[in-house]
Length: 89
Image (cartoon, rainbow, N blue to C red):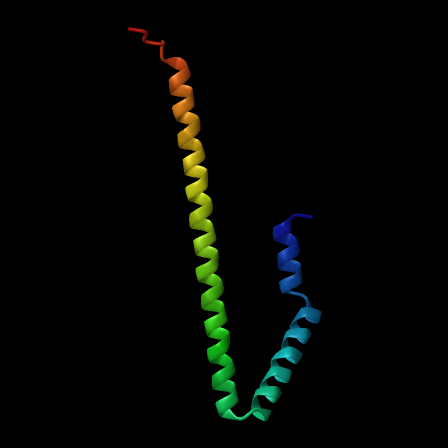
């Protein structure tokens, strides 16, 4: 079975639909129980954490890409140096 068919089967499953409905209802009931000030503070903290995670991932990707580029540049320079005839004057 391909991945596409598996995803479609899971998305159309009545069990998944029931679980999603139950989770949504439970989350709504929990949020009604909390005061509005707490919900806004939790949402703010969650937003800050997600933003920090995104920034960290982007910095990691950029530094990793920079290291790969430096390594590739060094390999190209070494290959060019090996291909050049030595000039002894």
